[in-house]
Image (cartoon, rainbow, N blue to C red; front, side, top):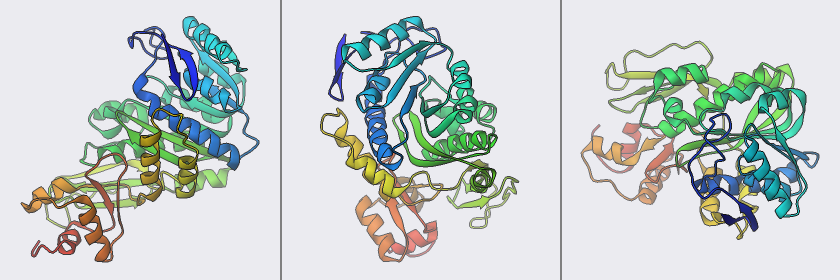
Length: 374
């Protein structure tokens, strides 16, 4: 069937059955990922202003080719690759139907990447992106865009799978969107560092059931080391919600919570403790969201929140905080306003309506909202 997305008309499979590259399930198209693709286009527009020399773009798991077609419409020199011959044919058809230049390649993307260099590489596989990360970072000049849909391993719900795939110990905490995103970025940063490259996230978000990050590359052993220095561990008490982050690659787990004395303290890492987005660039991306995008309203709201979001490696769920106090929760705006009035930094988190990021501890939050005692 034909659909319209971003002002372009593309042909996609009628059924949503199937999967992306390497799964053997047929050509895949997911309409619920339109937000992902809309933000991608806005990032490509903003990044062209940031780095005018970035010209070539690889849609590494092209499937129907919709992402590559939209990148081609933005003036990028597009290559659409897939191991499924039907997907390659459909991507070529969609480029031709929109009178857009672009190359379609029936190849394993890892082999393609080891033989070619691209300015921008987009990895949007079914599941984990890690099998494609090494060649992507080895042979990309400027920007690597990555989606991960295996959120259960990333956030620690499937612990052993997360350890195997991401070389870290993620933990299933109540701030699992943040855990998943930072576990993913940590694995990608460490992969890039093997090639003496720094990979710094300039925009990231967690939406629906995936994490998405855009990593700008810089070559050099020193800058790669600087990125490694932004990795570390988070200790989190499951009882009183105390948290602490520690930089470094050698874990020193906290066995007893310093706040409540409990022994249910989880240690996760190494995760990325640095910023997951550049506020100025996130605002520039927001400005490049246009009304012809089907998810324009959601994309603008998302990017506004990402740009303003406090840079902390965890968040608190306001409802759980108030449940621990045996008190009814007040409105989020009122709650954040009270924290700020008490001298604490506080913002919403972009991935959940009741998630708050703040520099305040749990006792400080309680005091800020006028509840006596601890």
